[in-house]
Length: 383
Ligand SMILES: Cc1cc2nc3c(=O)[nH]c(=O)nc-3n(C[C@H](O)[C@H](O)[C@H](O)COP(=O)(O)OP(=O)(O)OC[C@H]3O[C@@H](n4cnc5c(N)ncnc54)[C@H](O)[C@@H]3O)c2cc1C
Image 1: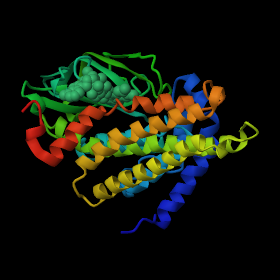
Image 2 (image 1 turned 30 degrees about the horizontal axis):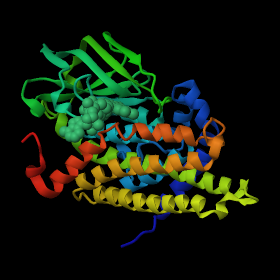
Image 3 (image 1 turned 120 degrees about the horizontal axis):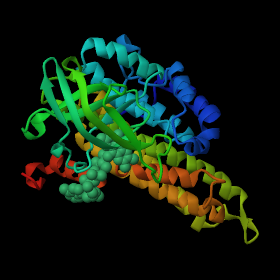
């Protein structure tokens, strides 16, 4: 067992860390107020080779392992939790496009995603189908060499900002086997979007995407007809780990900043760090963060080794966002009244992280996955 990072991973961590500290951290809260991604910051990350490192070199990636992407996630998220969603979107969607989209389309889009010139979204959820995504209804009807898309996707990250989206649509009534993935440029006629006013994650933004007789060439089908669910579930086994890393990264940054604060702030004539009521929550946070990192890196390592990791990914997805959120609440509280305002970023991190207890599948759904992986179908309610 080797717990060390490679020279390449350390080098890329240094690059990501420098960029995060110098360019992201100072404007984390400003970007929330602007309510959108900074395209110039995304482009700068792309130029530094920090997006889609795990994607094949043929498409502009580095062909790195998934653990290397985890290293980048931690550092970018320390600078700006929301910006780290770019790595997740690129890793999750970019891999699906490389593996399953028509080669022409993959070569058109993936290099642009990696360079930071294009934003990619994933549209699975519908107003009536979130946890129960198999129940989705957005219709894709064949019409010659095209498909006509009609319906609504909702709760979609980057809905109003994405340049291209992987859309899951119903091509037959055959349950999960009736769902097909389409690569859909967002400037096609008949597509419109609306934005939500969320508690956190405001620079990523969520919204609905409406499809009104949207003509999509059959060439834009990803994989085979009816394979949409299979494709996305393998992808979720990756994004769920990266989300864990993203949430832990934000909490690590706040814990580090809070240690500094409690070492300076005085009450009862001494630094508050001298009170165990103050230092112990941070010591507990350090313990949880260390445990969470081990879990996430092990899951990424398993993916790199082509070992099963569905269970581990689900563990990362429910546990890390919850722990990170709990830790961030402590960081807010340990700042006293000062924490309850925008002088410090902890309240924003707390709100940003909380959303990812829901996005990409709730804790209940992840626990169902873990139970099924360990004990089999006896634990599945709908079988
Ligand atoms: C920040 C954020 C980003 C998101 N980004 C995207 C995106 O980019 N693309 C996309 O497609 N979707 C996205 N989503 C949607 C997200 O994936 C869904 O919200 C999520 O899967 C839950 O679905 P739901 O909201 O319909 O909740 P519901 O399915 O209605 O569930 C409501 C509650 O019931 C619980 N529940 C449901 N079924 C069960 C069960 N069988 N057993 C126990 N409890 C159950 C759930 O855990 C939850 O607590 C995002 C959501 C958020 C909050």
